[in-house]
Image (cartoon, rainbow, N blue to C red):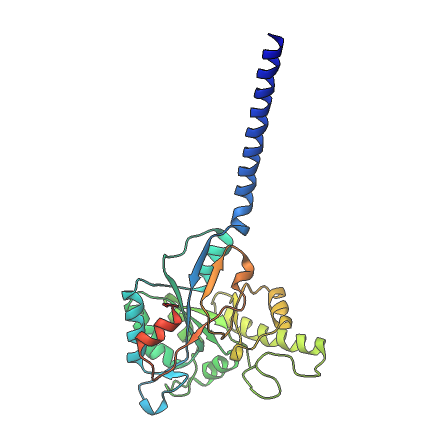
Length: 286
């Protein structure tokens, strides 16, 4: 009898220990999953620039309104839903859901023709997009009031008007030269402190321009020419940016890890390529 009792007691203790261990694993899994879980979503990002009807101007960075419309229609037919940087941040940091087939549509430089053509095309389809402005150009055309489809950039009042469709992000104040300094990269032999001061002040100018106009502070920095470095990434993170956009052509895998939002890849949309061909490549439809 005593041996049977001991055997039964031993079994009970083992059962309790196994249950405690299992509960501990479950609790640990619940705590860790939001950061290190295997949840992931593929997010292709399309990169547009200038939109003009003039066929003579179309090329690597200029397409027609008809081409843009065809791209947007095809995306919807394929079941894609346009998302913004804010949507990605909500997914990564807050555990929010993303659509089953998300795609980000971005417009670089902030051309006025984006207001003329892209804005109504997106609005008619209930789609949203990201526009990354060059601060000095937006300031210039805000001051002189000029609106020409060929060369003007978006004024601040237009950016406010477009908020129902466009999310505004930072594309530098004036770092679009392609000479000794490529975009926002550090020049060879440039003092580190001087470089950091230049990049910080340039970036802050555009941040201030946008927020002083009553627009939300950008959370994403779009690299001029896609040129980035460890130095620029470190500085931008220290300034509170939670996302950066590059120009490397690849589809992104977005996880719950905040680091996945830096140096996101994008596919440039040139003229002279069919919608089917471009989207097949950009959406990773192999």
